[in-house]
Image (cartoon, one colour):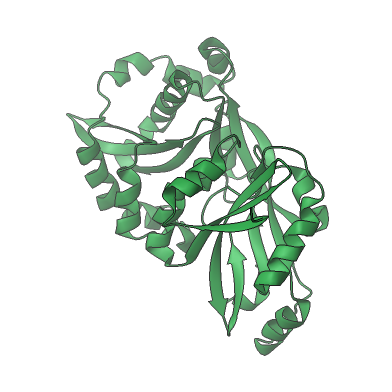
Length: 328
């Protein structure tokens, strides 16, 4: 058996088997990365390490630059996750990336699922916080954790729930028709501008829960939730200006859906910046926060420095955009 294995997107069964017995997010699944591949076109794999009963996985995408290759975790919160503690993995990972001749790697870590002994802390840089809700709590406890304004809204949940929209075809059309205008309205970064093929594929998946709300059966807001056995995830929300009033109600619908599936954790995502208005709104929903780290690893320092120098940039700066040589 290989110690290191790169499972391609085409090997759907092998990808799923590698995730068995390991706590993982939707962002670790083959479905998630196929969706991102439809936008980026990157060569995407599930890296799988197996040795003496230890199994550690991490989705990676290969990107070419100036005749060299670096790696990145595609959109979302995935990173290293495994079945046991194994601090020696860092040495095996170094062996692997050296053998593959990668220049560097940018790896986002899901703080609720990763194991800190799989990587060196000196390469971990905090960008913001992610917010989680413990779904093992009762609905009464979850309600009591809401701030006063959210409580007022959720008190009327049953009244609004009767008019929620679940028809996938209606919600998918609303979502894809309004997605890009919504991004412009909220000044979202380019990283969120996925192709229509990506959006439609995600809407077709079995492990996606879609719910919408509006007037007279016409959607004004929609939420997309993704899930695995380990984690429920707030994936996307799109709303017309008049549909913003439904945000908390639709979020509560997702929370109830995950609890019905006995999923222990709900990932609300994070803010654009630490403690911004988006982050505070999630905290007011009764969520607790965990620091969101990204690994900035340099594997071939000579090549990395050469690529940075060619663009007139300092290779020593890892505090901001990484890899520096990809900075526009």
